[in-house]
Amino acid sequence: MASENSDALEELRWRRSQAYAGGGLKRNEAIRSSGRGTARDRISLLLDEDSFVEIDTFVTHRSTDHGMFLHETLGDGVVAGHGSINGRRVYCFAQDFSVHGGSMGEMHAQKIAKVVEMAERTKVPLVGIWDGGGQRAHDGVASLGGTGVLLDRLVQCSGRIPMISLVLGPVVGVSALGASLADFTILGEEHGQLFLSSPVETPEVLSGEIDAQGLGGANLHASRSGIACLIAEDEEDACGLAAEILSFLPDYNMANPPKLDCDDDPQRSNPVLETIVPDNPNRPYDMIKVIEEVADDGLFMELFGSYAENIIIGFARMDGCSVGIIANQPKVLAGCLDIDASIKAARFIRTCDAFNIPLLTFEDVPGFLPGVVQEWGGIIRHGAKLLYAYAEATVPKLTVITRKAYGGAYLAMSCKHLSSDYNIAWPTAELAVMGADGAVSIIHRYEINAVPDEEKEAVRTQLAEDYKSKFGDPYIAARNGWLDDVIEPSETRLRLIRALRILSSKREWSPPKKHGNIPL
Image 1: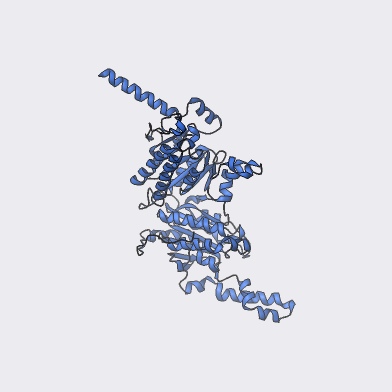
Image 2: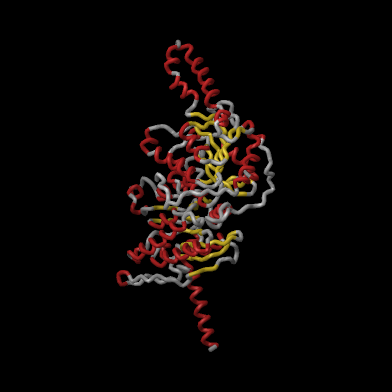
């Protein structure tokens, strides 16, 4: 009996060693020599030491396509399980490029789907490390079936638990869709690539017009497609960024985000903000400096920093609590809203709303960007997404108007009329249908045309000043209840923290419906 037990233990140890070897020592060393880590290396970087508990270690494929057995490898090219990040429970998986190039066969996909489903059941975040060459041809349509189950599980988890994708190698085909279903997608700068169509099938790559990095590399997805929220310098940095994002998020949608101890005085004044807005209304300034001045310890985690730079989004803390920041950036396109900015902000607003993170908006917006390209591209529909996202959100909504708030863009940026909870303005703020110069050119065009040419500029300037005093003054909006207060800029942090404290118990009820119909 003892001999049988000993043999069984030996077999178990042998099988585990085979599973841990992945595609073999030679392939693992080749991966490491290229500057990438193996699946197990990456999980060790991501999780707290000795916290990983693996599941489905012995899963293998069941392919007999074309009468030939694919090489059988325990684990089937993906390492999955659960552990902790800074003491917080998470489920995770990492595709193993050493096994069939990380390709997704039926059991590979089913294994990930199981982890996703377990994360949803236990109400903890999910982190996926992607590095694989699309669907496995040897499995035939079975690989698509398994992938379909996985995609369904990911969609069901959306808005219920936080999901983060780390793309640390080439990810092709439907796997790229799976990676981009996450709330946050981080790409490795050197090796992270996403393609829906393989580069070897893309005419521009075949003709030499563009290389694989230019087609689907990290910088492309950070600046052009808007898929990558952050670019990591290396794999350790990617895991650190994932941990930092998680620190702002709750475990699941019915929980509150973690509150951290903070030594930054909640009553700290912001005298720097008194002079940050230039006297010339057409001169730019950096809105990130405003955000950092107000946030705890000056820390702001900007997301999608290279995409639609005319709007800023990211996480900060105030009084130790997570807040989602949305802000116009006067340095870029004067802070105008365009198609990309509207999409970028709308999705972030919905993400924060899903996970009970209050929204703080800093507004300096002269309007929607005019032009044929924008109109033909659907700025009406995309701008409506932003308005819809703000109106739909039920978390506390706070808005600070620092300078311009004109027209439809004023309405779309969390105005009081969209049930925003606390709207304040600095004395430099202007709320109007449009800028004074444009309004005067329309309202008083006959009067201006009637005076001699040499007097036109003086008349126009005087009329613009009159228009500002009648319609652009923040006190006019405050008299109508569209602003809760006009404050000194130095009081901004204090006022916002007081508002966040009282709004922490906010709950909204709306009539039941399956879901709204956002203009996608």
